Length: 389
Image (cartoon, rainbow, N blue to C red):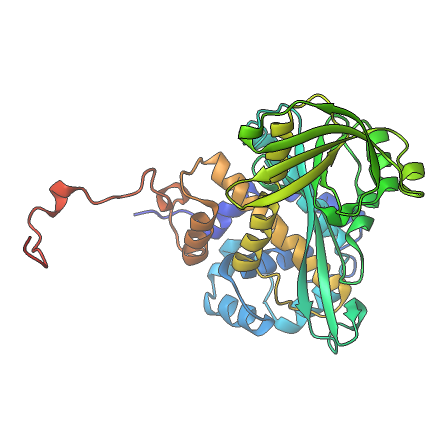
């Protein structure tokens, strides 16, 4: 029988506590705090994310139910929903943003050799946002329509390993293109975007940083063709052109040539027009790059289904941002754990097992079987058959 530490403590071994304390000191998170520290706050919120707690009262009831095990989990203060609510409201959310970026940096190093659908050595990022609808009376600071509020989570996703490299939380009224102003573009990297990010001033700035973009072209794009190259129509390609923008504003904002690719997806029976500033990759590769952008849609779907970001424990901007960044920290922490052990189970299965066994005294590696226990035919030779064939 295992007599060691509980599973929650073993999971938090992958959490960088010393660097977390540096983040806390940077923003004076523990100033005038006697009992409920920033680490206690993080552990409570991480527990809520791993187990899918729905409210502060739910968190309080479940943590008090485990009683003495809280000390062994690293929680040295008595958990109260009012104390946790106050901490989420007043403690600087940037503490949890910075520690999430530390975890992201570690995860990206672990997943750097993950394969892509496209054979590229350069980094490939997808940019997009997801909207979480909220109640206007509770979240008036996030109003984006007459009778509705919403929080928008702008995300830059590394397509190798589906690791979010940067996130910005804003009200629903903030347009997607403003996210481009906050990104430090990496020279040689590819940034894949939907047509909602079409802003030629910002795209030209990206081009000047020696980065590449792949974006869907709008239907009303004004341009003139300079060069047409032959394409393989059997692979869905219809044209590969070098163009120059001719619109009164776009031609000034982006004065250099662009590449326009026309591609037909046979499976979807849909036409796509792509713009890019890369003239060396094959046109089919450009189309495949944009298809990889779907990973960010799957990422949004995953975190909304399995993490607590569709309902918030607090109503202030600080509480919302704190919860989002801790949720991202938990997502990346589980991804690091999955890679370090290593585990053959999916991220979803890993999260479900951890949520069930969080306060059990079990060795972490024994929770996850190396191979799925499929029942072989030899193991059921003595079982009764329901139907005679």
